[in-house]
Figure 1 (cartoon, rainbow, N blue to C red):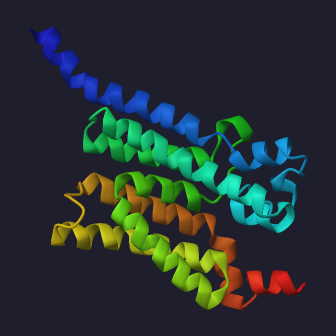
Figure 2: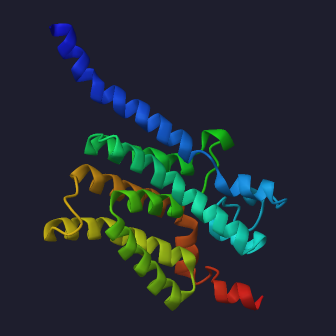
Length: 218
């Protein structure tokens, strides 16, 4: 009986470890690098901002490559969380899966830990966790981007609103109940997004951050 109890106590940790590892490996698949290689484009880590993400790919590879990268990066966050949810895993495990997929994108084991900044993958995670919050975040992104034409400002603003949306909607009973583990996971993603965008933030402060309107004129 004691052995059975010990096994049941260890199961949640084992489940979290396996699910997290699988999510991390999925997140480690760099859509930008693979897409550019298949389309005969340069490695995004050697072009523009050196970031393997959709915005940088857009600058030198065009819309088609950027859209494929964006969708692929979002799916890396979306699919692991949806699978964990369908398997009825505990909220703590689902939150950990989302975080693991996100960290896989930031630090991919398959590409020398040189990953992107995580915006699209974070959006994919949030879309699976709460479609309503993801929609609101997308609206924030559109509003800020139209006003500034600067992708990094729009992305960071939308990301910072996500945990606020989760908390407020949870209080109002909109979109179902949200676990505290989910909110903590999204807050951690926000912190990592800020860290990954630190150079962008410095350029924004100095008024040197490039905008899409400037790119079109140049």
